[in-house]
Amino acid sequence: MSDIAVVTGASGGIGAAVAKMIHAKSEGQLRVCIHYNGNKAAADKVASEIPDSFAVQSDLSTAEGRKILLNAALSEGTPFCLVNNAGVDRPHEPALMVTEEAYVKILDTNLKAPLFLMRDFAKEMARGESGVIVNISSVLARKAVVGSAIYRASKAALEALTAQFAAELGPKGVRVVAVAPGFIETSMTAAIAEEQRAGIKKDVALGAFGGPDAVAETVWHAIENQYLTGAVLAVDGGMGL
Ligand SMILES: NC(=O)c1ccc[n+]([C@@H]2O[C@H](COP(=O)([O-])OP(=O)(O)OC[C@H]3O[C@@H](n4cnc5c(N)ncnc54)[C@H](OP(=O)(O)O)[C@@H]3O)[C@@H](O)[C@H]2O)c1
Picture 1: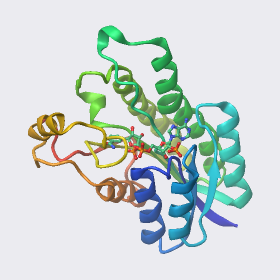
Picture 2 (picture 1 turned 180 degrees about the horizontal axis):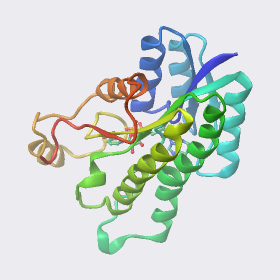
Picture 3 (picture 1 turned 90 degrees about the vertical axis):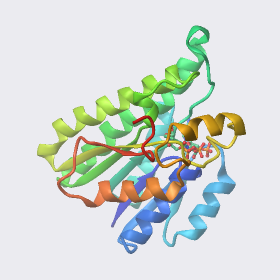
Picture 4 (picture 1 turned 45 degrees about the vertical axis):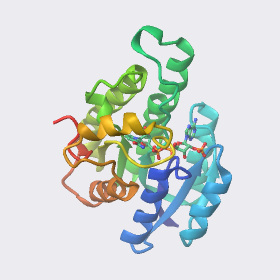
């Protein structure tokens, strides 16, 4: 049975880049699980570009969806790596307009899903005293952008969980790291109007949005560096310094 690297939301921009990076950098030693939810066409395209990968569909905001992913990974091999990348940032609601519906949607996907996936995958990794979990956070965990209250809270809490799990799992041979991207060119940011883009770029020291590969390289660093755990690695072009 081979070692498996699960990438959630690998049908999206960052997840697809991470899945390809893991395959390339591990020289095929890690077998990549391409997880997706609604976008089968995008997942199939990513899977077709990664030899020996396999795709799994599930809604991670539900316990059933998380179980489907865990069981699929276990049936293919031994989970060595989990990248909790799937996430949503919508609806964008100003602070005085936040709704309970948005709270449930964003928190269930961005916080509840990675929490319980970490619990269940880490149990498997701890059995072999070897594994690494990478949680995709955001620069917005530390920065106010209008409309991001619930999203910000979800990512700040994910960073807290990263530190907590790292502390408890380190002695069991499992590392947990967060990667916090700035604004990255994917479908999540594609709808940002040109005027707003210009305003955001003024706040980025390097003056531009990043590409998904910049995030994927940082995720690979987190996977590879054996002395790294509990940290939040920013890959944000120096946003908001
Ligand atoms: N782009 C940025 O500027 C940026 C900045 C900081 C952090 N991030 C974080 O990076 C991660 C990836 O974002 P992205 O930019 O690549 O966005 P994206 O292109 O919109 O991809 C989002 C991915 O999450 C999956 N997903 C959403 N809800 C799901 C659910 N309920 N169950 C399972 N999968 C679900 C989507 O699956 P389907 O499409 O198949 O439904 C898709 O694969 C997110 O956690 C995001 O918060 C992004």
